[in-house]
Length: 230
Image (tube, rainbow, N blue to C red):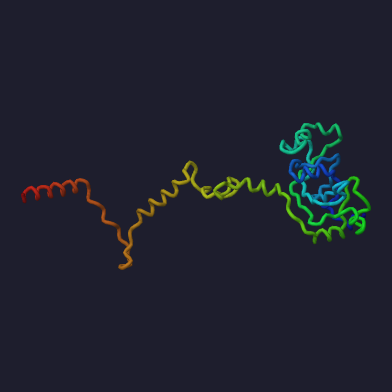
């Protein structure tokens, strides 16, 4: 297959049905291999081996990882890989399954042969040729999962804002200032504004209350007048 007739980012790779089932259920989130895939490869057309013998899923993957790079105990055999235990079997690279799409119509081995896309099941991996790539561009896909979308959503805060990596509502407040203090200060500023007289078209300030001493005198005078009247 000539380099000019193949897609550099898509390859067809054989995976056992049990491992495919673990990927679909998300029990397994890395595919382990003895070899490093070319840097341009970003998608795996998963050829599920016998008895399925068909391509049913397309996985978007990460670059190759080495032991110690995964640091995610949630996936099958991740800890074994990180600990170097799989190197005894020659497995030195891991590829994270970041996204998985399902083909509405699986591509069988007979389809691959009839269209000249493959002569038989891939033994290691095969690049997707351009005619197959063109056919795939028109294929109907359904999303199984997207780990990148889940990771992005984890940064969103429960109240609809975003965390410190984004621009939360109180991001511009002064250091040490409580989030609500800016609002209280604003409310006080509004309360101090002069009242307006729409009819006159001018603004006037409210008459301040008399000083405490004057209020005391007014109260004493009123009491004296009431006492005198009696």
